[in-house]
Length: 161
Image 1 (spheres, one colour):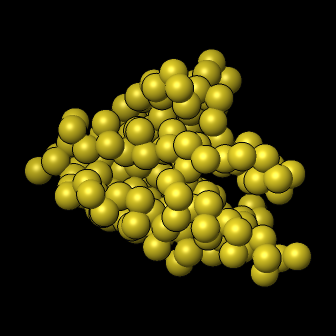
Image 2 (image 1 turned 90 degrees about the horizontal axis):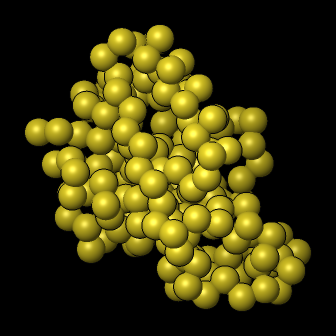
């Protein structure tokens, strides 16, 4: 069984993330969507909230598992006995950073491979940061995230304000 790890902060998950996850599910037998617990970031949603949001968003994709991790991605990949890290790329700027990360992961573990998937053109500008900023400024994010994400953001921002 080929296992792919699709890591990210997913704060919140966007339709661009889901596009990559769905397409990855056709390339490997199992996709583990791994939510990064990054102590250096101040996320809007907790790890548990992001996991629950992702479970709802991917419930129609049978070979997807949602999990979380902290620490080095290569250690998590080893723990899951995964074959490949799957990363989505939107632009050249993404490639430069992700290329560095892929090389570092390869340095840390020569058996770890990284596969890059180009985002669909309709999502090439989309990021979680843009979604949050647009939402905070009362902009429309319909079609950029699943409907249940919009509901979760409404609830979260009421709690924050």
